[in-house]
Length: 76
Image 1 (tube, rainbow, N blue to C red):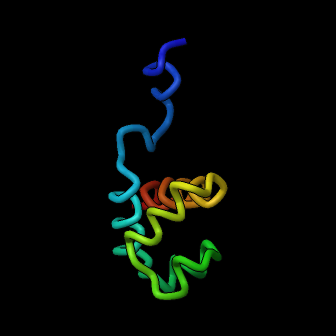
Image 2: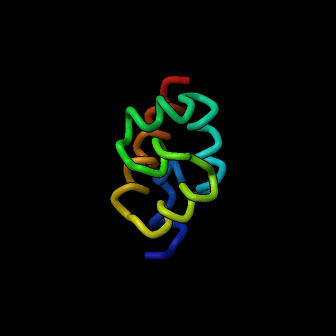
């Protein structure tokens, strides 16, 4: 199975993590994001850069961010 076939049903394919995080912060704000996903980088001195660094190293947190983003774009 080619990489394109694996990703054809993935709504996050081709979207940069930074763009996803930017959209989530614009929509929910840092406090709202921290309420929905309880991770320190969203609740204690949050920044895009620190969040990106943490998410890239933490697959379970990245998965939660992806799920929340899919939920958010589904409601738009």
